[in-house]
Length: 278
Picture 1: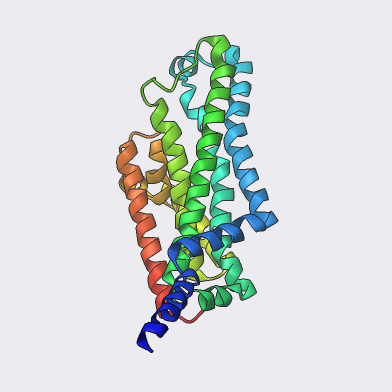
Picture 2 (picture 1 turned 135 degrees about the horizontal axis):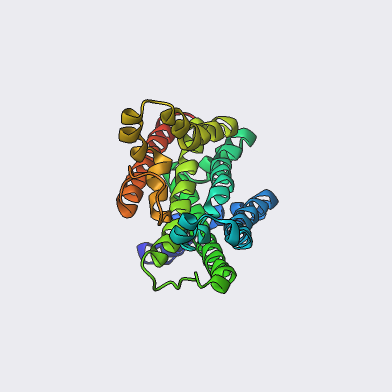
């Protein structure tokens, strides 16, 4: 009897393994969710166009006004900063979409289906962050390279072009894609933390845009001491060659601090996800 039961048990075990919930399958389901929503594709397209196009537009305007610039402005001009300047607009689309990826499921109630399909909640969070981070990095790296090459073509008539081998060039191109990727990951965490689209976007805007404005109105001694450590100021050091203020962190030191802020947000979201009901 035992000898006859073993093949059947093996088949049942094999079928069980085929239907088991694994991290790879959760990743695949999140990939499907991401690309089947038309709004997601439009948001990512908007981020790509902003990242690839804004820098070229700004460089074209600057070259058109070149004869009217002051000697100091012409002497200190570098085409590296406008080449990656599209992050100013792209970060809005990346941040808002990051919040929506998970807060949207809470608003529709779909998150309950996700947690019923995946017995443990954290794999869902890791999968959402992993898929969105991978898509954001690839898309923004391509967009940044397009912007970089386009800007160099625009400024070549004035002999101001750079190549990726020049000091700081590869760092700002790669750093811009990394900054936007980390920003998107942070915003997924914020969406999971507050479980509300409006609340997540408000928190995203407050942390990255309102906080620097409030700090700027403080006395200079206090503002100079705090400003470099704010999330936006720290994270974007890796995208910058010419700094407007002398009070800033090193490019990779600032980005490391921004990664630390993201890790705190991710940890808080993970703890909240485990401890609270869906």
